[in-house]
Length: 326
Ligand code: NAP
Ligand code: GDD
Image (cartoon, rainbow, N blue to C red):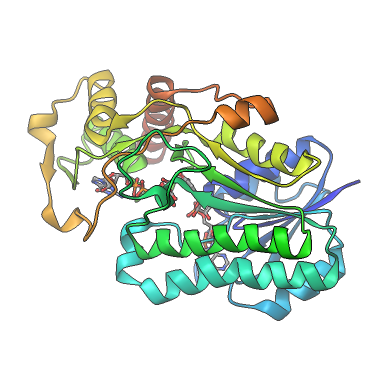
């Protein structure tokens, strides 16, 4: 039985990837940081699975990671942990950069010392392309990061390449474009919109405050994207891959898709709050995932309209049940 370690297990991607690997017969060690409130909602459904073990870890703790490698002897490590909110990274830049950049450095050092055969996946991001005007972006596009978060992701991305070349590690980076789901964090714009629309529809909220509606993103489904992570580690050689849908839509398009299907008026319920704008914005993201299609045989299955509908129907059902105990 193969063993995989997943950092960031309590996050959106961690939970989907763990389910995917458990279904493939892996033993999965999920790593979570300690928090004062319980935040295991996304992993409660498989917490008791006989092939799942939850352990504490923090991206800032090198010794802890060494011990976990020695104890579980994994074949694969997926580094998904991060302070992943771009706007928050402007507010807590030092904490963000320490975790997002130095976390993978600590992990790669541990892998190189304990067992250089361990395959490593790094969660790189389309935010790394930043303000590059030459979209669509592929693996060779110039990285022009526009936030502390993206600068730190660029550092980690370059480091993975460096450890691959210097020490022959099987270390790959997935340059994933935005991916969403009913498990998306509630302060990311898509989920903020679907939760607010559901609450407005049920008479539990009146206004939704948003920032920049013009930014465009290449939005896919997280459940599809974790398969690509796994496929990267099954290849003979490590490499970098863009994972995207190849379509881009504005925040306003997403808002309209959700509000139209809920039959709600944007004019009546949505207001712009300047405090939600970022010091620097990434205006346009569009990915070209030709390489992943060709080499990994990967394709996105769920696209924009279906994704918006999936998220809204999940939230309206959940919030109705919570509010009215039906
Ligand atoms: P997420 O939902 O925000 O999950 C992040 C995870 O990292 C959570 O489990 C979080 O724990 C954990 N974490 C944060 N700081 C940590 C620390 N110092 N030590 C240990 N764990 C820590 O993010 P996601 O959407 O699943 O994304 C997964 C990864 O892909 C991230 O690295 C993100 O930057 C990257 N990425 C995401 C997207 C996207 O569109 N979703 C696109 C490209 C790249 P808590 O639950 O305690 O907060
Ligand atoms: N969060 C948020 N909240 N964003 C808003 C809001 C709001 O109220 N109003 C407008 N936006 C705009 C942001 O300015 C941005 O242009 C866009 O909506 C998407 O914002 P987020 O959903 O926060 O995602 P992101 O694109 O900044 O970052 C996500 O995708 C990256 C990959 O490109 C995160 O998941 C990152 O971790 C990931 O790397």
